[in-house]
Image 1 (cartoon, helix red, strand yellow):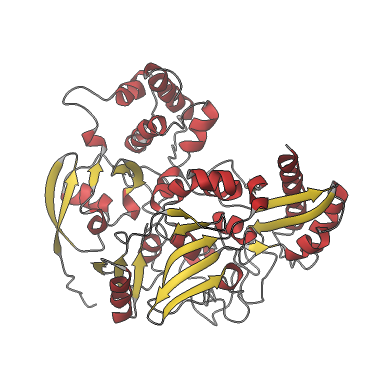
Image 2: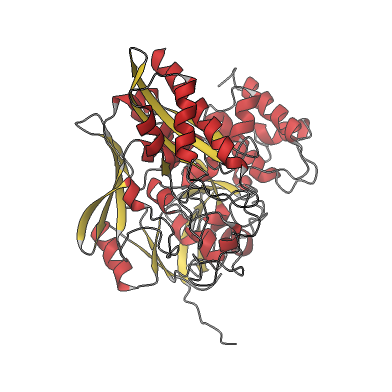
Length: 330
Length: 164
């Protein structure tokens, strides 16, 4: 691990000033990604701005019934916050199915969104990787790509975004609030995660020194019946092969509202808008769910080892919709 | 090869109720500070990348990983390691249970297992074997002493007054 300098920020403006003063700065929250990547030689940060003393740990009620989640709120705390459990059970469940309790006690919500892919070719530090070294190629394309993405990929990168909670947040149209040298911004969730395209090294539309201060989740009565399912190679403490966040509203057996997002299949937390569009106004039954799932996966691009995800993702989506339907009717 | 003269600073650390001041570079992890600077070698370095749980300690009453915590960032917080668990010569009930139920073979992961196990009960996550498995999943035992670890946790849970 190469030498670092370290400073503690007393407030948000101080943090931004410290980070802006040194272009090789990173913010230090829980450290579960940043310390790991510095030690592995993947992060090039030379200066850490510790932001843990900033007052950004609360989960606050919003007038529209939504929530404002502080960027430094810990995963384990958010998962057990009563308003999250009651109004957005998929968010709580996704948090509890991620990582281990020690990591959940450390990891912040803002850091969770900025964590980097677990693609082994990024992390080994030597393989061609267009995220780590633009233009060097992608070892995953013809490598061991069983865990890699099938949606939103490009010929330059097929890495998945690893977060669970980001999948649930995507389903509920969360907004990411930042403060930077140029002031405050509110970034729609979908815009916060860039598709790899020709520039896989660009992952977020975040300027140097720009800090995530919170995540706003709009009020959504539909979310009270939401579910999160995760399928993986072992039962606990493992990233998703496929995951699904789903919520459904039904009137007179017809789908009147639906939210679906998927993890483990996309290069970003994947909002399944095609499936949603295929479901609204249709009968709320497994036939419709299968049709919608097929529509979402129609443009999947598979590699040698990850073709199984196309079927697994469809079955996961159908099961998720059935579960949320049962919950909405109970 | 150039040698970079890294800046060290005095870092006060509150560990097991005692204040220590160590002279460290900012890149030093809490785990290395404990093991290499303070001779508190009970916390073990297994993977050094937040995967195995053998470095589990408590900071401000919560179980966390010392390998992914910078010592500088832990300054000002209350740290408890396995060395702080016993009351003098009196082992903590979880330490006694690990011995009674033979909840280890090589022992390398044991301090991390115990630091997690105490918290699993405190958190109320030890109600069933399934819960224990889920909430202990951040502690890997290469010897696979899991059934005995679960038995030790059940024993302490039940002795503490029924299911938590």
